[in-house]
Image 1 (cartoon, rainbow, N blue to C red):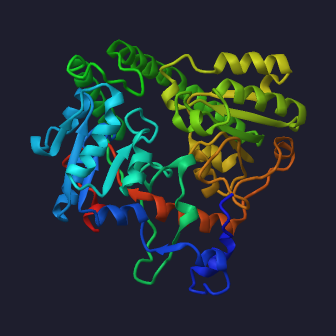
Image 2: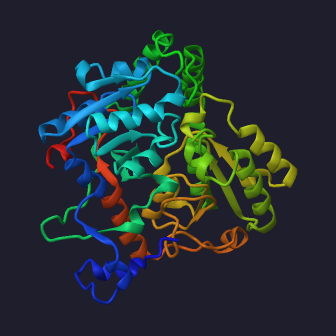
Length: 433
C-alpha cells in the first residue's frame, strides 16, 4: 500500500542508502515534519482545537519563537478555551457557514498566514479550507488523538488517518545525536481533566448558542444528552468492570484460542470515512458469519465495546442475537471492560476496522487483520489474508519490518504530550525544541 520496503528501511537507517532507490526518493528528516514546519512558521492561524488549554500552550510556545498567532472561534466553547488571547489575536466567526471560505481566505491574506493548525479534519468548519489553503500556498497541519496512546498526539501535514501522506513522503533518519526513542508524556487524573475541560466547553457552547446561532457542531450539543450519557457510562462501568475482567482472565487461563475484536464508536470519523462500513453492526454481521463458517471450533471471539459507547445502548444484544442464530453459543463473548495489555498478550489475532488498538497489537507482535483503511495497513506488517484464511492460520507481522515501520510512524507523526493536561502543566517535549 505504501510502496516502501521497510526491511530495506532498516538497512537504510544504518546509512546504506545507495542500494534502495525508493527510500532515496523520500524526504529524510530527523523529527516530525509537521512539527518542523510549525516551528518555522512566521504566522499561524488556529482553527478549532481539542477541548481544553492545548492551543494556549501551543500558542505560547510559538510566540516565544517569534511566530504571530491568530485564532478563529466558532462558538462559545471555543471562546472559553481561547479566553487567554487578546482581542486583536481573535476572530469571532458568527455568520452562515457559506461565508466561511471567503472569510478564511481573507484571514490568510490579512495576517500573512503561512500555516493553518486544526484538530479534527472532518469537522464542518475544516473540510472547506483544505483546497483553498492548497490554492493560496498555505500549509495545513492537522492534530488528532495519538495513533499511540496514551501520552501522544498526532500531528501531520495536510491530513491524518486515511488522509495521511506522511509515510509516503518522509523517512525518519535516525542519527547518532538524536537516537532516543520517543517516550509518552502522561498526566495524572487524565480522564477527570478531560471531562472537566469538556464540561466547561459544552456549558459555554450552550450559554452562548444564540450569539453563534449559525454554528453547526460536529456532534451532539445537548446538556441533557451528555448528563444522561455520562450517568449511564459510569453505571455500566461499575456494573460490568469486575465481571468482564474475570471473564477475560478466565478465557486466558483456559488457554482458549482468542481472536480479539475492539469495536469503535459509530460516529468516529475513522469509521465513517475510512471504515468501508456504515456502522459497527454491518462489520459484526460479516465477521460473525465468517467465523461461524471458517473459524476453528475451539477458538473464541472476544469482542470489546469502545469505552465511549458505555453511555449508549451498545451492541451486546445484537451480538448475542446474531451469535445465537449462527449457532456460535459460548464461542462469542462480549465485554465492556478488560485489561487490554493482558488480552493482547494472550490472543492469537486481532481483527479491527481501523482502530488504533491495531498498532498496540502490532507492538505485541500479534497478527492484525484490517477491515477498513488504516494508516498502519501495509504488507508484511498487517495480515493481507482473506478473512476465511485469517481464522485458520493468522499471518504474523514480520518482526523486523513491523519494528521499523512502527518506529518510523511514531517519529514521523507523533508528539509526546498529554493533550488534555491543565494549562499549568508544560509540554516538556515542545519546550525542548
